[in-house]
Image (cartoon, rainbow, N blue to C red; front, side, top):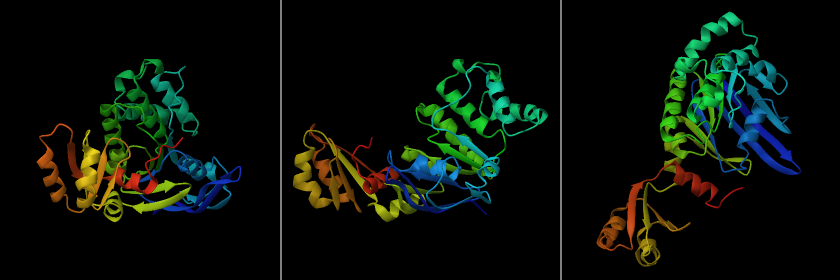
Length: 306
């Protein structure tokens, strides 16, 4: 069953098309990632699919409802984790869940029964009466996730859910999101963490300049768009080594900063050459498998985006 279908979606601001004919669909129980640099059109796409922004063209079907015409009905079965926490500082942890649940016209008795389960899920069972100001960043993020589940949604929108969190808190959120997909929930995730996308997403789309430029599973995208092995070379002698050997031994070399990235199908000759120089302090290297970040940078470029 398709939970969300987007067909030829378009949106322009001041004559600039920020969403330019986007197409994708989410199957029941999958985590779908929407990746892209700043300004690629990800957040606008999320707002369009939720019916919060009027599209200029295209068709959106969210949980069998046409959006934006029937967005209100669709959003009753949707949960949203926004990019920035918007918890109410005047309420306790428990009160934040209770008040938010009332927006869905849920009976108070049903909410009272559901809140302890959500607090346990967020590992906040002992902080039910705590004020928001006393919570850590990780606790606030877990509470925001729990709040998004108050109406037991079929589809969860997560806009950069782990931005600003330390590694421990990020791994806890990842584990909680995996639990949701195992329970049959469908997730639409935007993130700038390629490791997060590679770990969580069954499929993902890479978006740039308002268009989807690649779509597939993380493994499919890596296989289709990048050489399988990468050797990173850095140090004072990296430039000289690249000119003398790297460009001859690798299929492709890039130097966006102080590091030379060598992409190849077989790194044996590269590593053997570098091992010969390893005793020299002006060259160091790292040999690894290609990953989703390599694909992302190849397709969208390495230039900074505002």
